[in-house]
Length: 82
Image (cartoon, rainbow, N blue to C red; front, side, top):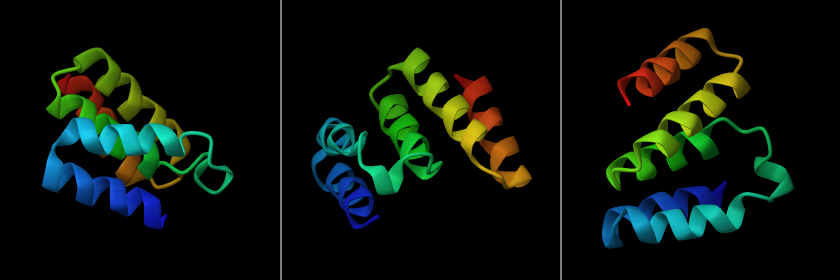
């Protein structure tokens, strides 16, 4: 979780590509597997980079892993926006 927050902070300081590189290193972390915020943050960074199809897929993946209906609706809405 700390590393996920670090990736967000790095993206704010150095740009989305830098944060995305850190996130990609976390993809196989067992403690983040199935955690909806990892693909959600990844979707945000991909969207900032203009990588629309990848961003859409990440928002959809995040929506499929959350149990919260409001979060799911928001993530699906974000996916449709791309």
